[in-house]
Amino acid sequence: METKIVYNASYGGFGLSKQAISVLKERSPEFDEFKPERHNPILVEVVEELKSEVNDTFSDLKITQIKGNKYQIENYDGKEYVLTPQAMEWHIIDTPEYRKKFPEDYL
Image 1 (cartoon, helix red, strand yellow):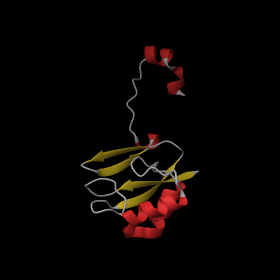
Image 2 (cartoon, rainbow, N blue to C red):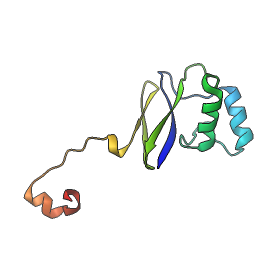
Image 3 (cartoon, rainbow, N blue to C red):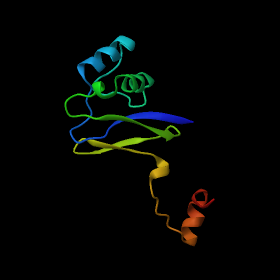
């Protein structure tokens, strides 16, 4: 199953235009503009519909699709990156004592 996630692709930070906030509150009165769930289907729908008009002065909101239901949003100076467990590189300590202690990690 793929999930759509909204993120900000430019420096400056995530922000919604007044028009976008108005549409979101109309469609979902409990929508929290200050801490939106980025996977919220109504948010995704509004970003798809309004395109560049969804952005405030400094944002450039985009949609990405992930597999599964786990993600994190990291940012650098407001530019965001969507991370998933599959995208993370794991370093595994592969010794006999660790294989014994954590057998589920070596299946």
